[in-house]
Amino acid sequence: MPSADCDTDHRFVKSKVRLSVKVAPKKRGSCTRKLQVDKLHELSEEFRRELEVRLDNNEIPDQDEDPENEWQHLKTILQETTGEVNGFSSRKNKDWFDENDAEVEDLLKTKRSCHAKLLTYPNVQAAKAAYRTACSTLQHKLREIKNNWWLALAERIQSYADMGNTRAFYEALQSVYGPVNQVQAPLRSSDGSGLLTDKYSTPFWVAGLSTMGTFLVTIGTYKSPPSKTYPNRK
Image (cartoon, rainbow, N blue to C red; front, side):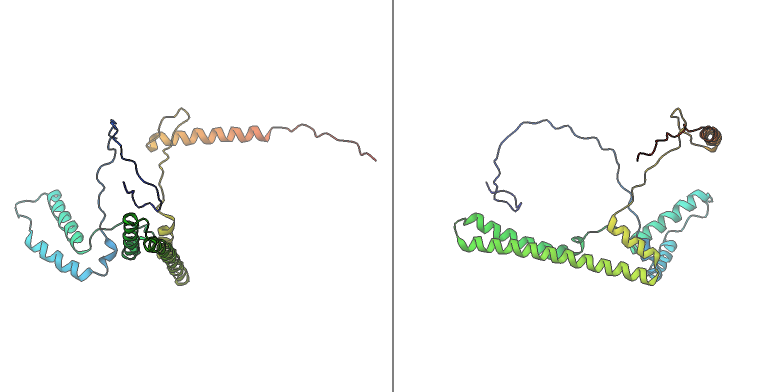
């Protein structure tokens, strides 16, 4: 049977295997979508009009004087308005192919169609030549798109550095190197127990600094052995 398009001439062998796959437990729940607050400055007038309309149509009853209910009502209106006007933020760390999806997809469609013709007519020289040309064109265009994307990104980062825009400069660098993994390293005592509050962490620092002082004094009183002297040989 014809194989998947993996740029090879291999074929798949169809077989039936009885396996029992253990389903991995889901450790993480649904991720909370983040509001795209960066566009708030550009869409401030539209956001203000939409917020006024929603506040007029969703008034809190006068008999409800609970501050918590009023805050929850206002928070819901703000979140819904921001989500409708500004939208939600997508993945920040984009790669070169994310901004050229349409062009890359057209090239892949051309290659797939040539590959399908080659599988249908394997002995036709025109089909083989068309497939080789499509593969070569795809490889050349992908390298060109990737190189142009990196050049444009480098010019944009350099322009931020020249203008002194530190925030945009580091955001552009983060888009290149990816997000920073924040690792939590809780403070622990010598026996391995966690120190969560200042009540427990303060005696730890006192004991630790006292031990360090004793260690430094021990090093200061230590006398090194005399060095060996060797006679000069003529």
